[in-house]
Picture 1 (cartoon, rainbow, N blue to C red):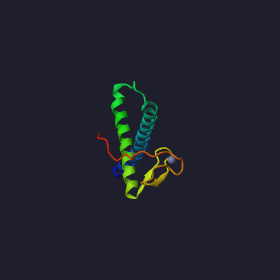
Picture 2 (spheres, helix red, strand yellow; picture 1 turned 90 degrees about the horizontal axis):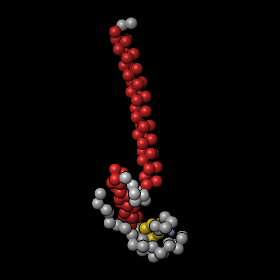
Picture 3 (cartoon, protein in one colour; picture 1 turned 60 degrees about the horizontal axis):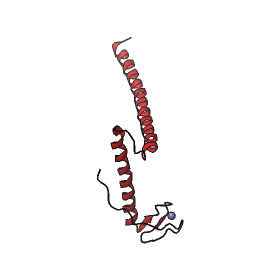
Picture 4 (cartoon, rainbow, N blue to C red; picture 1 turned 60 degrees about the vertical axis):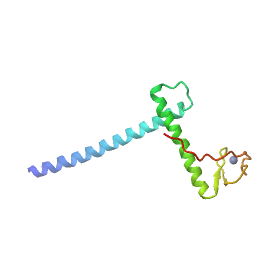
Length: 114
Ligand SMILES: [Zn+2]
């Protein structure tokens, strides 16, 4: 076999291995992400959580809160708000939810610093 042909075969094998490697790395990252979500859901209200996890859990809670604030701000630009009890979308100046009857609270518009 000519040297060039050997090189092409090796190159094709490396590409194939790289593809398998990337698939395995992507699956690993996805599994770690899923594990993190399971851990977070199981521990977000755990006050005795180990210190090494606490900072990250607290940061995720702040990010969840800020996502809610950004969603509130987005709805407000459309003259709307969300019922915090059932998720129904209502006119911004509503006092009660017209779906579940919940007495609406002030809309959170202040972001928390992370
Ligand atoms: Zn509601």
